[in-house]
Structures are given as C-alpha cells and as structure tokens.
Amino acid sequence: MKHYEVEILDAKTREKLCFLDKVEPQATIAEIKNLFTKTHPQWYPARQSLRLEPKGRSLKDEDVLQSLPVGTTATFYFRDLGAQISWVTVFLTEYAGPLLIYLLFYFRVPFLYGPRYDFTASRHAVVHLACACHSFHYIKRLLETLFVHRFSHGTMPLRNIFKNCTYYWGFAAWMAYYINHPLYTPPAYGDEQVKLALAVFLFCQLGNFSIHVALRNLRPAGSKTRKIPYPTRNPFTWLFLLVSCPNYTYEVGSWIGFTIMTQCLPVALFSLVGFVQMAIWAQGKHRSYLREFRDYPPLRSPIVPFLL
Amino acid sequence: MASSEEDGSGNGSVEEKENGKKRSLGALATAWLIFYNIAMTAGWLVLGIAMARFYIQRGTHRGLFRSVQKILKFFQTFALLEVVHCAVVHTSVLVTGVQVSSRIFMVWFIAHSIKQIQNEESVILFLVVWTVTEITRYSFYTFNLLNHLPYFIKWARYNFFIILYPAGVAGELLTIYAALPYVKKTGMYSLRLPNKYNVSFDYYYFLIIVMFSYIPLFPQLYLHMLRQRRKVLHGEVIVEKDD
Image (cartoon, rainbow over all chains, first blue to last red; front, side, top):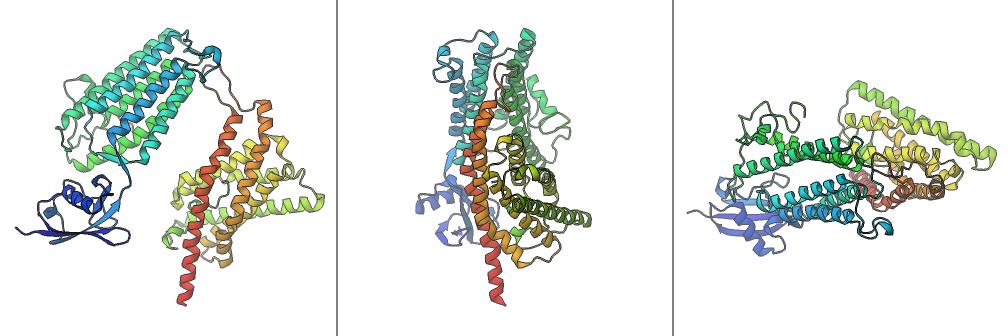
C-alpha cells in the first residue's frame, strides 16, 4: 500500500508547520487534524481549517486523502479559526438566560422596579399567561437542544457566544421589564385578543416542535447526511409543501402570537429582528438545498409561502 | 464619528482596496456622481465661506449656527443619497448608513432641536471639522472620477483625518453633553409609561448611551483609516522608488 506524505503550511505566511509521513491513503481529514494537533496542541481539531489552496474552501472532516486532487505528497494550508465553543454549550447558555431573566422581572425582584413593588404580583391575568408562554418557549428550546437537535457542526467561534447572549438576554430583559411593569397596559381588545394570541402561539409551538422532530428523523444518529425534508403524517409538517424552513415560519408565528398577547412594542421589535435573521438563514438554506438536490420541489419558497 | 472619512463610503468610481483598479460604471452613473460630488464640494465650500464671513464681520461665533443652518441642513441632508450610491459604487451600505445617520442625528436631533446649545463653541468646532473634511472628501471623489487626482488632495484626504477625526469627535461629544440638562428639563422626545404600546423611551439616557458608544466605535474607525492610509500612501512611496 502506497503511503502519502502530508505537509501542512500556514495559509498566510506559507511557513511549514508540520510534516507527516506514512499517512494511509484512506486517512480522513479528521485523522490528519488529530495528527497535526499532536505537534501543535494549542490548535485542537475544531479550530483547524485545512484547505488545498491558501484562500480555498475548507476541507470536510469526512474527506478521504486519496479522493482529493493531491499527489503522493499532499500540501494543505492551515488557517486558525480561533477559539471554538460547542453549539450545544452556546444554545444552552443563550436560552437559559432569557428563561431566568424573564422570571426575575416576573417576580419583581428588588432593584428592577421601585421598592414598593418588590415581590408583588401583577393584577392582570395576561401577565401570568405571558410568563407561562415565555418560560414554556425557552424550556422547550433547552430540551430540544439536549434531546432533539442533531448538529452538522460541532463548534462555532467563541466570540459568537458573547454576541448571541447579548442579543437574547438583552431582548429578554427589555421585553420582560415592560410586560411585568406595574404600569403595564393589558391588550386593547381584552380577552378576545389574548385567546386568539394564545391559539396562534400554541399552534406555532406545536408546529415548530413537529418540524424539529421531522428533521431529526431525517438524519441517523452521529451522521451528517443531508436529505430533502418531506411532509410526514403529522399535519404540522405539511408546511414543507410550501416552505423550505417551516421551523422558522412557525417560530416567527409564535412570536407574532406573543406580540398580540402582550401588546408590547419591544416584543414586536424582537419578532421583527428575529424574522429578518431567520429569513436570511432560510434563504441560505433554500439555496444550498437547490444546489445540492436536482429534484428539489419547485413550489417551495424559503420561509413565507409564495412570498419570501 | 460623524466624520465621513471612511473609505468604504466613497462616491468615486475607485475601489481603493484593489490597488487603484477601477470598476467601470455606466456613463449615466458616472455623470451623475461627478455632478453630485462637484455640487457637494461647492456646497461645503459655500458653507465654509459663510462661516468665515460671519466670524470676520461679527467677531463672534454667537448666532453663527443660525446664520448658516439652512445651507448646512440642505447639504448634509442631501448626503442621504450616498446610501443609495452604495448600490452603484459597491461600497458598504452599513458603514455609509451609520456615518450619514450620525451626521443627520447631530444636525437635526441635537443642534436643530435643542436651540439653547447652538452658540456653544463645540458646535463651531465640529462644523469647522466637517467643512474641511467634506471639502477634501468630495473633491477627492470628483478628481478620482475624472481620473486626474492631484497628489495633494490624496495627501490631504489621508492625513487631515489624523487631527480632524478626534477634533470632530470632541466637538460632537461636548455638544451632546451641553445639551443634556435641557433634554432632562423638557423631557423632549421621550415616552413615559403607562401607554398602550407598553414601551418607554428616555431621550436623556439615550444620549448618554450614545456618548458612551463613541468609546468602542471611534478607535475602530480611526485605526481603519490609519490602515487605509498606510496602504494607499505606502503604495505610492514604493511606486516612486521604482522610478
């Protein structure tokens, strides 16, 4: 069996960082990354980007050495992706924050409102309902992170956790402050408005969960395969007929429901910003589906049926 | 911060990051941009002259803002178009948007709305800084578009900012600081609870946050300009050596 030699150069300085000889032809990029870590322990595999060209695309962990367009001496260029953090850690942190922060405002913990309001309760039923819905939403997200989602990537750059937590925690505090404020004004159309909003919210929470389960079932445990999602027997998944990312559609729907329920402008703004971000992600996902699958259903749009 | 020295917001047809390689624009777009940049150069020149004349004739800066405010408002507001130009000139909409917005903010939401601070020295400071900056910037773009850029204009664009940028920031911050007591007293632009939108806004605290935001933002923009300067003027030096 012919062995390969692998040399790894710094993509920016072209400095030779590592030379590996007697590498198996069937070695994967993941294995080569592990070998590289032995000589440079500060660059653990998750922060390595290896590519064939200094400015080329990153090679995937699953790529096999002999299937790459390299000679028996393969040259890879290395870029440090910076400190990495696992997706699970980021999700758990960014979701636990809003759950706890909202409750601090709900229970009117001292120093948030005036001292005469400390530990008092709102006299509006909708405020209690809103707390239940908000808490349910984030508990659902935490449980899905632990038990439902199957992540394509293990890690993301460390700075993302600061960015993401600022966004989630900041908005949660801003919303919670007004909804649980002693001077909160309940919805203009009273119980009718709250009932409608609750129905929308619950419907979309169920929908979002159904999509997450359907996506999980598409992908076997431990694998990173990608397949076209299709509607299942669960009616909530029938939205796949019209939309590539119905999970985002339902998520926006939930927040619209919460906005109507609380009639609170910061909630509306949070929904809007979330919608814009999810629309961008949905467009990206939609385009990569189209690129990867010849037979992708043409009726689907990224996030809003027929429109966006 | 309101200094529009950011390279990305260029309204010339030159992508300076690409070592002077020019991207071709349509003839109509080029013609419009040339007209726009000439008009803006002229406008800020007129403003500069108006300020100088006022000071020479009256010997004081009191009433200067009132006397030039129409010209200032017209040309600074017109600069909103530069956000649209980004689509044609392939520069960052976000960067240009932030810069133009911060200028509009100073002109309309501070100087115009809070009349009591119009005679502050800090207002004159940022007005002078803006005038010199804009005359340099717009003439730079004009000459670029016409493919006849005199070295001294390029030199000015990449050196004046070293002093002008911090000076402009000082003028803006001092002006906002001077405005704070009046904002607090009148409660202007503020919304209190209870209201049916369940939101509140306090312009006073908003202004304080704006002032603090200069701390992370100003160094980044300043360092970016320094890096651009090294790239553009340093490249120039190498070419001269080869002669």
